[in-house]
Image (tube, rainbow, N blue to C red; front, side, top):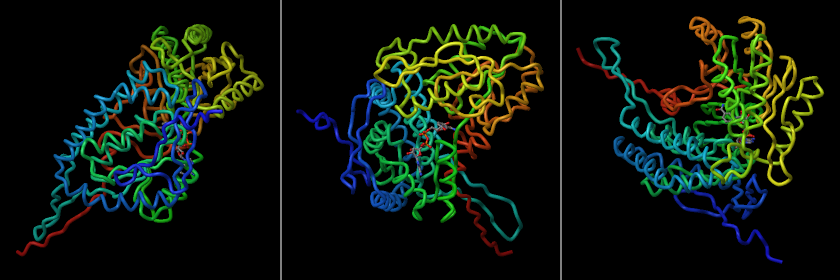
Amino acid sequence: MMDIQSDLRQHDLLIDGKRMPPGTGEYSVDINPATEEPIALVAQGSSADVDAAVRAARSALKVWNSIRAAERGRILQRLAGLMRENMEELAALESLDCGKPIAAVMRQDVPAAIDTVEYYAGWCDKINGQVVPTRPDALTYTLREPVGVVAAIVPWNFPLMIGMWKIAPALACGCTLIVKPAEITPLTALRIGELALEAGVPPGVLNIVTGKGSVVGDALVSHPGIDKVTFTGSPSVGRGILQGAAGNFKRVTLELGGKSANVIFADANLDNAVRAAASGVFFNTGQVCSAGSRILAHRDVYDEVVERLATRAKSIKVGDPSLRETSMGPLISAAQMKTVLSYVDTGRSEGASLVTGGTRVGDRGFFVEPTVFANVEHEMRISQEEIFGPVASVIRFNDEADAIRIANGTSYSLAAGVWSADLSRVHRVARDLKAGTVWINTYGYTDVRLPWGGAGDSGFGREHGDVAIENFTEPKAVWVAIDQ
Ligand code: NAD
């Protein structure tokens, strides 16, 4: 019998500019979540591999910072150009690895990743210190220096885009990195590592170590040679990272989960509101940290919102991600599908009304129908806990104060939406909502120029924009005596 795995390409680690087999010699099978078929063999890194990557990144710090800032910017521009030239390949890899519809990846993930690199390429020669007036017998100024070696730990829901949210600003600031993609979606990170070398990023500046979170992730977080950890993932892992990073007081940025509220008032444009609410919760099969998974509808329009949302849910084309007409692919894994379906059971047993969906589609691939629950009470688990799947909970509210109380009533505060034609109301509500991002009469947009992140169980710190430049630099004060 032919060994199917012998046909698969073996993906090694990328350390110091070279592809290297893992110290353990072990590889995991990466599968396509739409077909459950193996697509690649991926190196299972070990703590010894992390040591090697940290050594490479530490010695590359000097090399990377000996290149003029404007030239580093040109190298990043070349990387963006290579990503554009290889856009179809990157999209195909991301679609295969994550089960994302190819049309969505070409429209959203890849362009956003390229935009991020281009944006931070422009920052390289604009990271200024300041001359600060203190006293006449001194010249006092500040420098912004790279924090050093960064560990970037990336989740599986937007591996390429979220990876670039970390890689691009870190490189712009003169840092070097070890990137650990999620074990089940490593392919685009490895390809970006190759493209970066081709663009002129020196060996050792961007290292990719694949493998388990509990092995590679843990080794990075506790490693004394790492200066900063930037993490996107679940609150439980985030908590462990914060504790693990305490050893040498690493700087930490945590982008964690969400249970975002999308609040629809009775005077909202319901066509727009429900269209955006549907894509806000079903986009990427609901595996989005800012998914608008709680749809709060005013009691006067509640029934209409539920009915229209259910109609939209039923019209979503679920299926083969490689087809252009597919709008929703599978969940990422069997485990994630099990979790989502068990939340459907929880919703039912808590007394919510299942309006549509709630079951697996087919028996191959991890597809679940777009699901709408009505008559959801704020205290129910399906209203409080992040499901990370295509499950909408529609909750009734009576007035503005009630809406805010419900919207703010979870442990998360990442994002929120508000829909109304009343100008004063939308600004009042935007002010009162506990969230890192508030969308008014729209939902779900992000842009690398705007800060992104949350508080509470959604983590702390912000990515994007000039905040990310602060994240990856340390200010230094320089005091020069001036003889009088
Ligand atoms: P996860 O926390 O399980 O894994 C995230 C990453 O951490 C992976 O690379 C994983 O291998 C690694 N990891 C696991 N255990 C580790 C350990 N002990 N030490 C170090 N690293 C470890 O999360 P996930 O399941 O990949 O992603 C889903 C979660 O991510 C959701 O909760 C979602 O809301 C969140 N998320 C947040 C944002 C945001 O911007 N706030 C964006 C996307 C996803």
